[in-house]
Structures are given as structure tokens and as C-alpha cells.
Image (cartoon, rainbow, N blue to C red):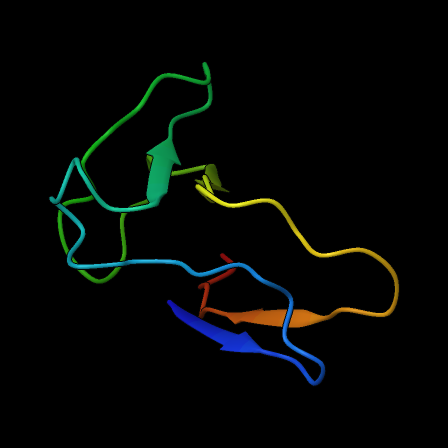
Length: 73
């Protein structure tokens, strides 16, 4: 996963260390909404991802992008 700040900057940041890192800002959830640790580059048990920013977004006209890849079966 990659976080790209826009111009002007959003005021947000995101840390993604690894799939198994419980302290980074990305949480992977199963179909029940429970957190799971993905078992590799593709895990069919992961149905949702949640990004938990620590900061607040600056007002009016600020942007950012999140880039990630998914496999659709």
C-alpha cells in the first residue's frame, strides 16, 4: 500500500510496515469484520481494509491518494 500526499498537502500521513505489523495504520478484516493477518501477497479471507490515520485532514481543497493492488476472483 502506498500513500501519496496531494498538492496542497492533506495534513495526513500513513505508515504501512508489513502485512503482519499490528502497529501500522492499515487493518485487514475478514467477512465478519474481524481483524486478520493476511497470509501472503493474496489471501481470499481478507474482504476489507481499513486505514486509520492519526491526524485530521486540513480543510478545503486538500487531497491524497491511496494506491493498493487487489486480485478479483
